[in-house]
Length: 353
Ligand code: FNR
Image (cartoon, rainbow, N blue to C red; front, side, top):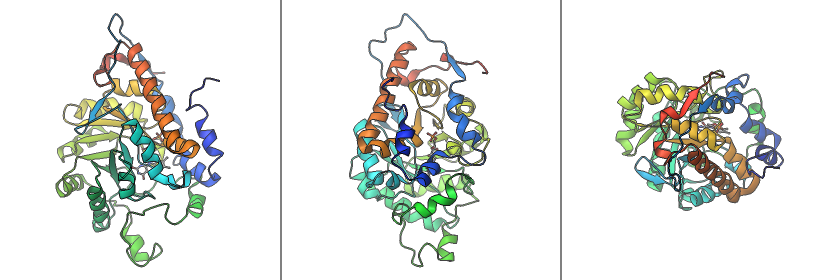
């Protein structure tokens, strides 16, 4: 036994979750190709480490959007925390707060923004804009009032990618109150066709929405779900402070290229003008080191956080993030680099394998 907390974590979580919820979290869209190759794709890069350098102390602290965090690691927005733990996002936030890293809260969260904020966690709001923008606006305003430090606009979901495994059955296993508790009561209930239509995801998102969010709420805007460098440029030109390279954990367009392979071109295009983040299959310090070398300012984790929450609540989240941080520290040191923020591009080479 290696003794790593993350080893076997998904299986331990599986034993604690309903089969519907487990499959929903684990699965990808379509054939699940993008979801299954995301982790492996980080391993196609190889390092060219440096020696004869003083790595007695290495700095992991990283500034994101003007705030310094303990490590270049954050929690990606996911739903159904209340399926994994009775206290839901609040319990996750208790753990993340102890690690000094940011938590991105899904707009579909099952805990209120105010309760999450009360844990003291530094948090950002993730948003899906609805076709009727007036449905989204009060949710964002509520988050801003509760202390969200940034707005993360998810851009890769004009429609929800069909997930064969899990999705059809999961909604019958979801209890009222596990989702969308921060939305104002629209009367009519969730089955009212008018309410449903107004809550449909926007299929006409454009750079003007990025500009509108930035101007309307005065917080930094991050656009999540970007893979093409030209789109990254359009986001930055519209006023985005950061671009988040992601294929949504392989849950949207299946066969979308791995973030580990899309990252470098995005950094090349906008890296001098905006922060670039990445998620998708990041599981180890070696993965984080690769992402940093390719120019990411930070990485985010999705599924592992839900597994840790199910496995051990806040303590599980602390074990997961703490272990990843120490793992990263060892990797940065072995690479001969003084700090996470200055890992150079030349550290990695793609072997094409
Ligand atoms: C997600 N993801 C997601 N993204 C988003 O922008 N808003 C959301 O509400 C959700 N919800 C969600 C639920 C579940 C169950 C999963 C697994 C994922 C995507 C998430 O933020 C992130 O992009 C991926 O999960 C990252 O990949 P890994 O770390 O799970 O491999």
